[in-house]
Amino acid sequence: MQHQNKIEAIKELLFGQQIEVYQKQINQIQKQVQDNHHTLMNALEQTRQQLTQHLANIEKQAMSKLQQTEQDLQSIIKKHEETHVSKEQMASILENLSKSLIAQLKVNLNK
Image 1: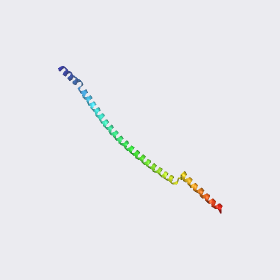
Image 2: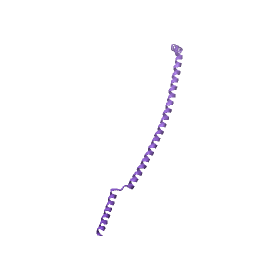
Image 3: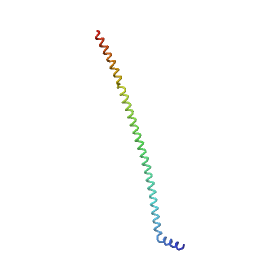
């Protein structure tokens, strides 16, 4: 036991200061790693918040454009419906016109 204590005392004499220097360097490195980790996590959180905001803005713009396009399309459909004559309506108009012309022709022939 005394022999081991003597060895430890000799090791302390020979390497004691170096071990303290190494321990200080290790502690400094650990602190730098922790500081860098903290800085990185803050930067990541800030980036996440910015991306979330950008995505919300893009979604809002897309929704606005979609609503405007829908309104424009509804307006075009309404205008088309107001001016469009269906085939059935056109056939009815032509049929009535032909009946009217035939009736007019008969009146003119009987005179």
